[in-house]
Image 1 (cartoon, rainbow, N blue to C red):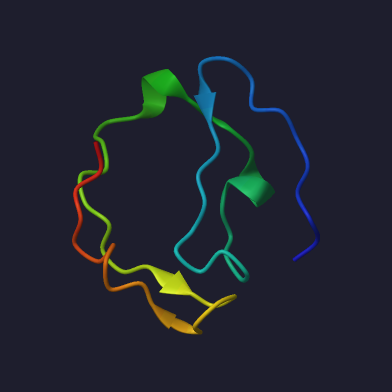
Image 2 (image 1 turned 90 degrees about the horizontal axis):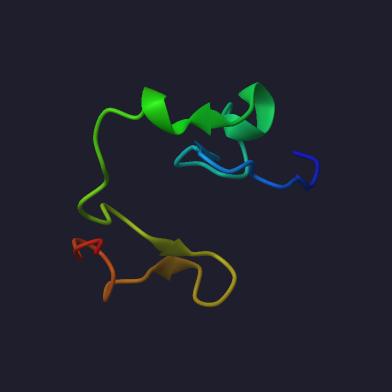
Length: 66
């Protein structure tokens, strides 16, 4: 996927898929207005560190999102 450069407008969010290098997500379909959001993220399900270790960041798996 080509690099994405953009400013997120006030009151909007950029949603990214769980496979950020190969996802059909907000980089393709644009920003989501805040009034379209129904819930909120509460936990980090699984976090991979492909640049450093190439494996999971176990310290973040299952951790709460403030």
